[in-house]
Image (tube, rainbow, N blue to C red; front, top):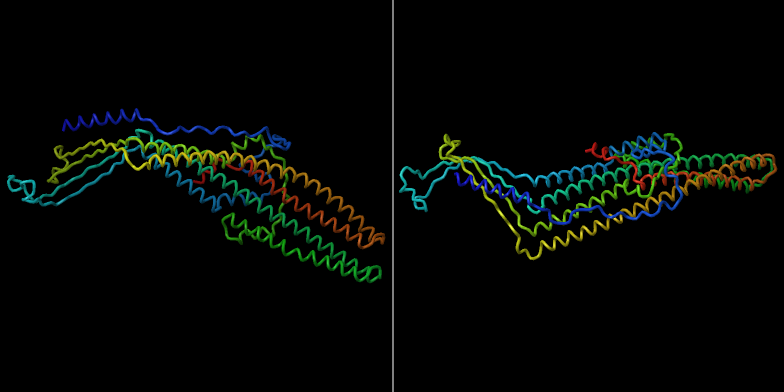
Length: 481
């Protein structure tokens, strides 16, 4: 027994010395080199005029209905809930990798009834007092510990931790996308409602014009053809109403899907009033700020870190693997003596394994992981360039849209004044009907163009918020788990 204990102590000392001298093979991860973001935005912007609460950027649009819809979507959207489930999966895999540092311990107990052969290697018949029929009682444990001699477990943990962080960044990206898509569909709905209101006003005006023409026809001031012209214009305007109503309904149903609810829940939005969306200036910051705010860049960088650690996991297969197996317990032929000191058993076995010949599979796997790491590095660089391009395009679209909205508003104001003067002149008999119709057509086209431009610019504002990476907080992601 003393020799066994001495061997056990020597084995533990050996294992401890090897563990302390362990090294991690494979490349250590380093942050990728900074990507050149250029000298700044290509358009002139004022980056610090106004502070925006980026976590809830949609509040800057000034619509409480939109605020409620986004909040509901962020708690109920099915894509986002799937992303949270993927985080839980990645966290479990990280915990499993961390478990590689701990020994595996199993316990067992048994009662075995056995009969020995009298003609076997053990001469049962010639040993006095030895019964060939035996009952063996046994209870004990077995433990196995793989020493992370070349850092394989550590690299696996690095990889799993980085993939967990990538999954969290993916969830943040989906969160931003869900909020932006809810806002986009909602603005599409509100824009279609404004377009419907403008078209209905046009129909009402055309009806009034037709009534006026019919009265003048009765007085003999206009020809019957003028009535037909106005009837045709009224019919064309009315024919456009169902298409707009269909777009409103489709947008409301789309909101139901984004909110993870049956479609009928959001159809009530069709009859709800809403304030006009505020088209605001944004503190867009510097172009380099995008690299900090965009979660897709964060996800790509974390996947690069994971693939770098994977090289170490694969490389460790080239080296010996050392483990220690230990066991102990009690064994007795008499249950009453099972826990006596003389019934104890113990074993300690150092094990070493080394893949010497495998047909080149390990080195092929190393080359494959190195290729995947190169892919991840290129994907990171692509993510950065895409983010910069997205932000530049979104900023350009929004700023140019603001200019277009301002110009369209001026056009509407001018067309409305001109039409009001034309109505007065027509009623006084100083203007022909064709001229009045021309003035009216210019006004309705201006109103329609303004409504479309305003909606498109509001949607561009949402796209700009998304491109700048606004709308996330890691604490919010953690609270959903």
